[in-house]
Length: 298
Image (cartoon, rainbow, N blue to C red; front, side, top):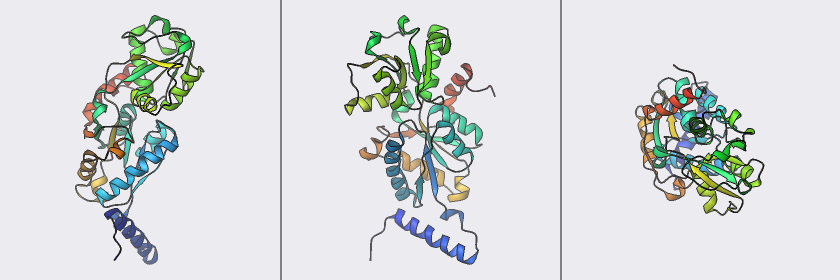
């Protein structure tokens, strides 16, 4: 008799029930539906599909249901997919998580990377600027061409903009000669390394990972400033999953994430592991978004 993993049995059961329901006109039970998740596109799509396809397989085995990862094209699209119930779980940044939970009552942040409790952003600069690493944001930053990441990025836009405003007392459009939004952290790195933009802000984990892979020419681009820490990425789940997938399903998802210890899976984020998270952990992110005009007061 062939060996099947729990995920394989779940997929086979889902297919069989679908066929039976289509043949008999019956309504397929909620338990047979796929559990679908997405992630903000903070890197190029090839990286994301490779990363999260493995996570889908892991969750399928742990949860005993078919788990599917679907990519999205933008940060707002990730929030919309969650709001519209196209996905029931999402790997959000701090800001997109806050936005999604406000649009979907009873949704919860259930896990964050160990590193996400004290995340930081890097400001990087092209060698032509002559800027060196320092503890304070340099006066010479003013007047440069500056690129953020995506407009909805916590580490690539929200927090860097907050710290820039706090330090210089000016909005980015007033401070820099040109302001861009690259769309993702890898793109920010490429734009600054090429000299298309002189300075940029990005996720420290992406910089560190690309540096380890040998993809950064440090003769052309360098880190010049590290931000104070803040809470960032997290897994957020819809509040109705227990009704659809069975009592205690939300807790099972959380436990599966907390028990993810395979270095190959964790390297895909990259994170050293996951810890519990709550909506309240991200109150500072919402407060910051309100302070710089990205979100409205409640």
